[in-house]
Amino acid sequence: MAKHSVAKHDSYDAIIIGSGFSGLYALHHLRDTMGLNVRAFDGAGGVGGTWWYNRYPGARVDAPSSPFYAYTFSEDLVNEWEWTETQTSQASVLAYLEHFAEKFDLTKDIQFETWIQDARFDEALQRWTIETDTGEIATAQFLICATGALFIANKPDYPGFDDFSGECYHTGRWPHEPVSFAGKRVGVIGTGSSGIQAIPEIAKEAAHVTVFQRTPQYSLPARNRLLAEGELAQYREDWEELRGSMYKRGGWPFKTTRRQAAEHSSEERRAVYEELWEEGGIHLSINSFRGVLVDKELNEEVSQFVRDKISELVQDPETARKLQPDYHFGTKRLILDNGYFETYNRDNISLVDIRENPIESFGRSSVRTRDEEHPIDVLVLATGFDAVTGSMLNINPKGVGGISLEEKWSERFNTYLGATVPDFPNLFMIHGPSSPGVLYTMPLGGERTTLWIAECIRHLQENELASMNATDAAAASWDKEINDMADQTLYPLTNSWYVGANIPGKPRQFLAHLRGSQYFDRLSDVAQTGFKGFEFKASALSREA
Image (cartoon, rainbow, N blue to C red; front, side):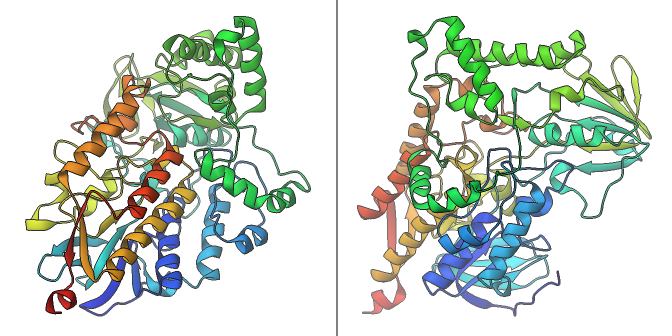
């Protein structure tokens, strides 16, 4: 898509960074509902955000998605879009977002292939100034960062990595042209969500696949299928009720269990696990028994159940052993797969546990581990992202007194409400640190956060105020809330990207709000009670009066 042009020193009410689910909805709502003058910028060549970049083989929403991983505000949109599978593919999600952008004529106000090089808050004018990689400058009262929780690709720093001369692709930056694996020896580093989705597809085509596993995963069967005739029509008929359920139940309309483990025998509990495993999706996590992510003993029972399933699915006992996780079930991001474990029964795949047999170096056409050398023609990096905080630090905006976000977050990723940062007035994040983010249905979370941002803007307009700035005290209190909540669970006991453990030197801190529906209730309460926790500055017009 051709780059749009913007004149130097253009002025807007709001600037949006990003055009994925959240950025597109923010543009639509702020422009079309509130009547603001809005401009969006994106380094990609088109809309889609995560779904524009992540085009690797097998890429899908890692949740039972259709039609719930979508916008909820427009019943017309719900009725006109034809979802076909229970677990939506990347291509389908991207097509949906392109349709959304066309339906609401959004691309005319998005500048693609444009990176924000600098963003600074002008204290005298109480406005943000951004500069792009082409030297263009624009200002706005509000800066909306819809930059994505999973965007900055994590590339491991292995010795001699640059010596490899074959094809190399990161799943988060996949080429738009087809990649052929036919007849090639492929190495895949990483078995998180993208690796688990890609490996079965790559193995169908490649001469051989060597998987370099960093951490085994509790992956659950997706049981992806075509939507049955009449199923989508029923969803549409029940849409208002389903939407209400999504608001109340953590972003999904599914009812969660109220069963108490102590009221059932071990045999009865095992029968429940078997039933939910066959049902597939996230049901083993949310519909077995209360307290799976709190009670170590119950968690170990579920963990062992999944390990036993891996042993049943994988024929080679040694490979099955390597694939079995030893941490608490559910404390890393749960993954849904379509035949991942069964793929290891193929003759053209091998598994290297690089905790036991670490990578030591790369050759021009090989990966050398401590025990052997593996010939490789193509290297696929499924090594994840600098999650939640990386995309904001990549922009590194400068706030009051010129303080950079990098300085502000050097020791802790302090925010207030997961959407604002002290000393960065009128800057709003969607899916920022200490918001529910990836633990909530992200399109709906983007909608609801945008509605709260709109309330902030409306409050400033109606009271002739120029800016609002979260206080350090409010941020410290919020940080304690998030961590107290997390400490009641097993999440902090596991090294995961939820706590920043995948990035060397990153401050260790739990990065998500664990109770999504309560989080949005809290946002509403803050708005309805005068925005406690914020300081305000009057506009020049108000001061003159």
